[in-house]
Each structure stands twice: as C-alpha cells, then as structure tokens.
Image (cartoon, rainbow, N blue to C red; front, top):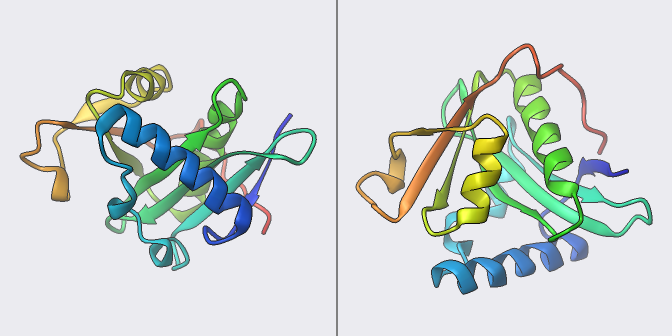
Length: 159
C-alpha cells in the first residue's frame, strides 16, 4: 500500500529520491538529467510534484507534472525505488492529476538506452511520439505520449 501526496521537490525526502534518480540515470546514460528539471516549474498552476510513501511512511518514489501547453502535461523526474512497486501507483496518480488539471495528454522523454523505463511506459499505455521541444533531432531521446481518458477519474491529491 502506498500513500501519494503533493510535496515540495526541495523537501529532504524528495531530494534523496531525486539524487537516487540522478545516480541511476548517470549510470545508464552518462547524465543525471537534472538539467531538464526546474523545481520552480512544478510549483506553478497546472503542475505538481508527488511523493509516494510505503506502508511504513518511507519515501518510495516521486514524479512531477508541468504544463507543455494548455492541453499537454509533461511528466518529469519519475522515479520509484527498485523493487518497491511504487512506480505503477505513482504513475496512475500523476495521470489522474493531469486529468484533474484538464490536460488531454501526458508526454514524457526518456533515453533510448534506458530499457527499463521504455518497457515500463509501453506497458502502461504510452506510445512513441515524435520528439518534441528540446528533444527534437536528438536520436538518443525517445518521447512518449498517452491520452488522458475516462480511465483517469478526476481526483484531488492531498497536500
């Protein structure tokens, strides 16, 4: 069982998880990916940072949404501690929150070499889309998208 709630990306638990994500990405891709994340951007309207906690209230994962346009949210800094099982729950909460904000699609980027992330997103209904924004023309980047649909009941994530 996981509890998922809004958090500040600068909170101690969030910083630990983001550091773990950065180390994992650096080992896989050679970059920690932190240059693609602005914490201030997930404190604005239409965005959020969520933290998942396990049954013992220990941090298990995190993820963020930020607006790309009026209808598209971008998923950022999605991470679940390996073996925790938090990823599925966190992704579902982020998708529900995107629908709650009124977005019709969720987009994300990961590196092609990150086979675990690619398989995770494909398993959960994300499909490859043309590389967008700063990822356009970058062959190492792989972008995904998923439409927000009726399988995303609109909910409110507690603060």
